[in-house]
Image 1 (cartoon, one colour):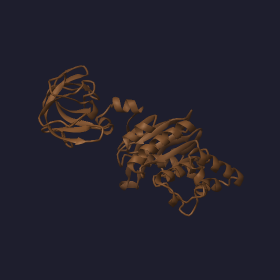
Image 2 (spheres, rainbow, N blue to C red):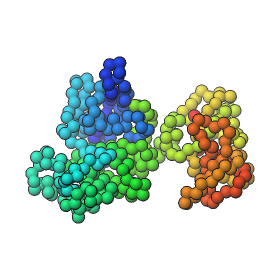
Image 3 (cartoon, rainbow, N blue to C red):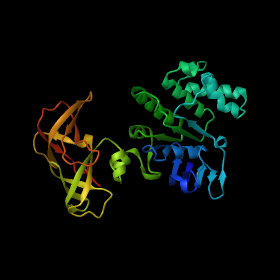
Image 4 (tube, rainbow, N blue to C red):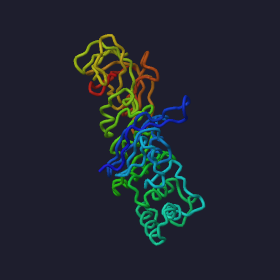
Amino acid sequence: MTELSVNDLHLDYGTGAHANPILKGVSMELQRGEVVALLGPSGSGKTTLLRAVAGLESPKAGAIDIGKRRVFDGARNFEMPAEERNLGLVFQSYALWPHKTVADNVAYGLKLRKTPSGEIATRVKAVLSQLGLGHLGERYPHQLSGGQQQRVAIARALVYNPQVILLDEPLSNLDAKLREEARAFLRELIVRLGLSALMVTHDQGEAMAISDRILLLNNGRIEQQGTPQSMYQAPNTLFTAEFMGSNNKLAAEVLSREGERVTVKLDGGTAVATLRGRSDVRPGEQLTGIIRVEQVRISGEASDNAIRLPLSTCMYLGDRWECLFKVDGGPAGSVGLRAYAPQRLDQGEYWLSLPEQSLWAF
């Protein structure tokens, strides 16, 4: 069953000649029990889309349905108030009342809805217990850790059993170590409770870990959508390929083509790449090669589909070394070619194998 449907949504900031289009015809669906991540760079429109669904921004055109209820219809100039949409919303800042206890913060939405006090107490106790906060009900926000505050914000969003929960960068205020733990907790909670969730994030690792499906936004439009695996392993565009994962970006000149297999000249040699998103490529044309850092294999001897480059430096990452190889005249923003090694490498030249199916040409 579809819990949320957005159809051809347009939204501008400003009016008339000064209007700045933010959403340019976005359509999406969220199924029951599904987690969808809105992913994209700053300014792509992901938070604006979330706020439009919540009723905190007013679109110019399109339609939004929550379950069987239409909450926005541009054609009829109808917009349901935010408080009537029955959505749970977790803000980036958590937005907890500092002068209220944990239990009172969680109960706040129920009190606004004039829920009987006995039912409020039962629901608050149940949701705090579900999130491992049962012993913290009488504490105040300043007495909690960042991870505990985040859980209180989630509890407040869940306490009145909303159809859909909206999460606006829910982990961004946590430090790196706590983010990893909170990410696992959030995914486990969503699966255990069977929640339908729409989550905004700019962190592609976070999106892949938590969501069932990713919508990648670029300049107000959906660039690509799919499962985390399909987005990572089969990007349709250069933008998607660059945004997902840790990549090498290489200047590539077409030497020949046979179907989707294209032989390209790279700095350090030639290699066969897989053509993506293009069908009109000719010899002599300049393309951009993309390969994930973890797909590059380092060898001291010549190997299949390999180029030869000098080592620039190695950086210790704990479980491995990241090695940087010199590339002359790479694309803008390229610092060279990166690859992982189990130990630090001696200075010199190395063969770098670039698997054909993992070297994409755009």
